[in-house]
Length: 140
Image (cartoon, helix red, strand yellow):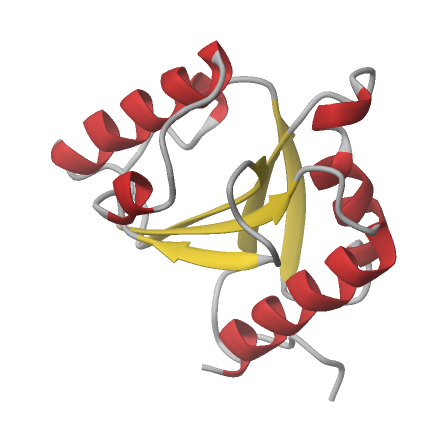
């Protein structure tokens, strides 16, 4: 069985935030490129803004994004954890945090899981660490 095979489950979607044209914000899409095809039950879907998240209630919402104030790839769970992960540092970060909290309050997100990658982190290391988080989740 391939790593990440989800038996009897719908495909898990990981929403990838970031800007390929902005070096400081391109790490999440680059990591997603390295992970595509390694997990048969996971689809990486690039998102430009919070409105790209699912319109209907989902059981889980997975996000891959760059973050400030962390030293390694970190799994942030739940909208309450966004405050603990650090203050927003850009308009995008503020927008995304606000939107995620709002969607969480109205019950549209289900369990929120954000794979946060430090800005400027080594891409190979980030892909390995993010892949390990996803492999563990896929095994559940």
